[in-house]
Length: 317
Image: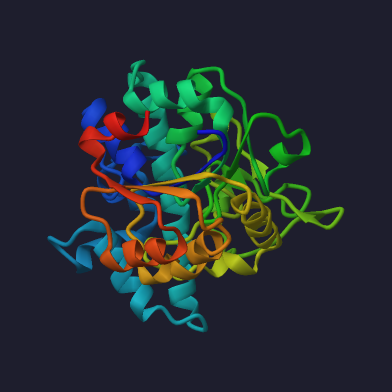
């Protein structure tokens, strides 16, 4: 393996949090995380974000992502109440996955199989596209003292190590306070969406420091689960896709981990896949891959391997 590009969905997070660490936190069930209110330890965040709490109560016994999908299907961009619900969901998800990262840091154990694999193959990885908001990948690299930078963020100003692109947002991204400055206690009361900060023609988001991860974001730009991304209009996202498309043209191995290929994501995913050279080895790591996705990959390359995550080491190391 000389030049490897990764694209990861929540399969990476499920493998670490659920299978390896066996935490009582599932990446697809953020409403069950028990996130505390940032400013009142006696309350839960959902008690403050009353629209989200009411939404959950309206759909009893339904999975978290299905609740969000029901909202996304009926979302009206011109309806102010829907705009507030959308904003509260983004606020909640940014803090929920930040809270999960606190638990991850507290319970971290070395020698997770993907940590071992990344350490072994680090020098061959030319880029990672992550559709996750969580910090599982970043934490894994940090714990191994491996360098990385997220394009579209201020980390891009001093690029060292693996390039990471998170087009659906990250729980530690925020708009620069040079663009919008709001006191933390007032942020959950502000309706914000898709504001930008541009430096020398480049879109930039700020990265939130670890000690401030549980403070509300000023601009929680996160693509909701099963939502067609509104962020593709943001400058940093458009520029990021252009960067990874150029990288895709150079790789000889493309690893796809835990991507369900939902209709809402296909245009973004295809824009990368369509730039992969015809002789690229594609490794699809998924116990039950989307059949249409697999057919798409086989049209792109005649060297596609379907790999079950339970025995992937035998195939990709």
